[in-house]
Amino acid sequence: MKVLKFGGTSVGSAQRIKEVAKLVTARGCNIIVLSAMSGTTNTLVEISDYLYKKNIDGAKETVNALEAKYMRTIDELYSTPEAKEEATREIKACFNYIRSFTKDIFTLFEEKEILAQGELMSTALMNIYLKEQGVNSVLLPALEYMRTDKNAEPDSQYIRQKLTAQFDKHQGADLYITQGYICRNAYGEIDNLQRGGSDYTASLIGAAINADEIEIWTDIDGMHNNDPRFVEGTQPVHQLHFEEAAELAYFGAKILHPTCILPAKLNNIPVRLLNTMQPDAPGTLIHNQQSAHIIKAVAAKDNITAIKIKSGRMLLAYGFLRKVFEIFETYQTPIDMIATSEVGVSVT
Ligand code: ASP
Ligand code: MG
Image (cartoon, rainbow, N blue to C red; front, side):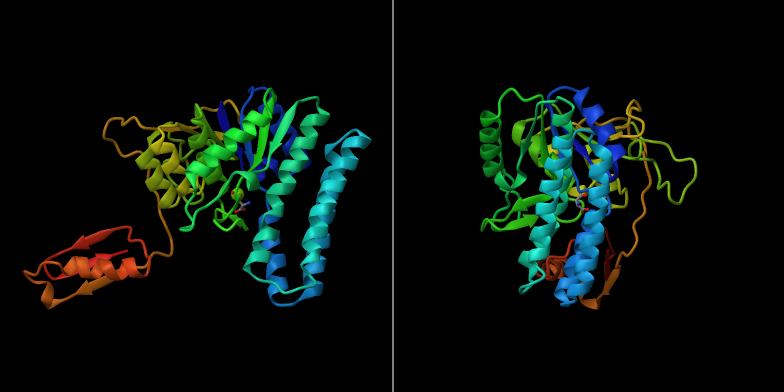
């Protein structure tokens, strides 16, 4: 079984949802992870901001506009009145839930519940569409198996156990659909894996079920050897080692969330980056095999802080760097690069 993850643009309209449905049904029994439709999570953040600021009118207006967009999608997506009705009921329930927060206090907890609606809606729309097409698809609720521990790290054992139980309960499906990004925390509250976290979901599921492969479907044909927004004529890189991909993801390649690499690497599950608009393009395969020592790509990152520390006391001293790094550790600040000399150290 493979894990296939589709990002927000890939499910961003009725037409796109139909294309993804066709693509996944042709690929057999896999587990499909979906992001929210493009723009939805940002709009939910916007609604939450209004609610924090007690701007109830602003919140209501934005909720209504987003709901109208979903109603148009429903109209375009389904052909039977039954499917339309079911989808309308599900989506309306989500929006009424969001509206319920316009009455009371609003904190981080409520915000996370609102943010979770995007993925709940995209998966509901897809599941109902697949059923309308005669596909026996089963929706696996992420909130029942995806969980973080007290350190806000994924609880791998719990995830594996609960996910296996879900599969046991729903044997014989044509395919499985689930939500990216959303989870519960150690206290059972609704939480998420941070913005862009659907890739992480895919990778955690891949690790939990020991998948054959994790496919990340986006709207670009793989990781490029340079940033196509700034450099002309870039080419996709066909193969990367996990570590090369991690560096590229961290230092600027927007196509893959950097957190996604580790679970796949630790469990030796290849990750393939593919393009929904060009499904036959080879994309990028990320795996554990090192190829010849060549430079495969260049990445750039903005908003980097460089700190230069110079001290006469560093001369012939020992333990100086430890003291410096302990400060970064205390403030949980990761360091990307470092250069040192006998009297100075620069870190970014
Ligand atoms: N919907 C979430 C976001 O926009 C997660 C994702 O797209 O991966 O951040
Ligand atoms: Mg996304």
